[in-house]
Image (cartoon, rainbow, N blue to C red):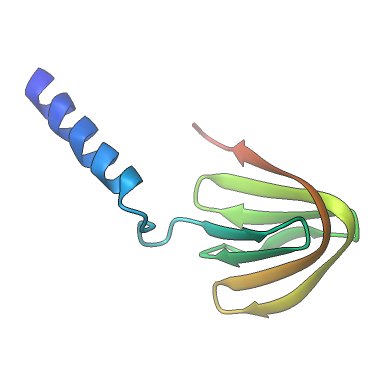
Length: 94
């Protein structure tokens, strides 16, 4: 059992430092405080100029700010613009 845990830890560590995302895991690119490029989402839950909540595999990501807009939404890609103040991860069922 201890060998299995050690192998999993090494594998996970390598993935975390590889610079590549895992398939279907959310990937965010933040450009200053003005734009978020978001891949691998599961839909938008809430959309107002002050808050956007986006479903992901493990729960939800909450983006707070002012003048928030969904500029692009196609397939699994979202582009959000506006004045971004914070991004929160809200895990569900963990």
